[in-house]
Image (cartoon, rainbow, N blue to C red; front, side, top):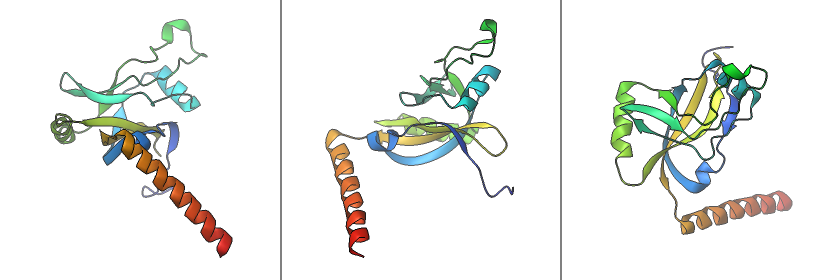
Length: 157
């Protein structure tokens, strides 16, 4: 396999992120995990639906992400399922993100957690602003219209 074709094995996806937020930009960050967390992620039962990323002590962390305990490991090896996990990005990107987070209404939402072609766990972060209720209704209306339009075109032609 060449370096150009990147294969992603998704461990968790946040499907509601694009519905609840306007995603302005995305970036990829590494994530610091323990051994049992990696094993559990490969099982695919993790969840990033209620999680967010933020600054703590000048570093970027992923908060409230649920990675279940790895049941095949002993009790003394287990990790805390919702502990803050450090995200690994370059200092220049971190400084740019810190300035963006300080703006009103801007937040970092994890879109997905996946393993790249080298087997490293990565988090895709979206730089997002929240949607209002009427924006969500417009999104749903547009999605329904696109679906109906495709159905009509398929039936007619």
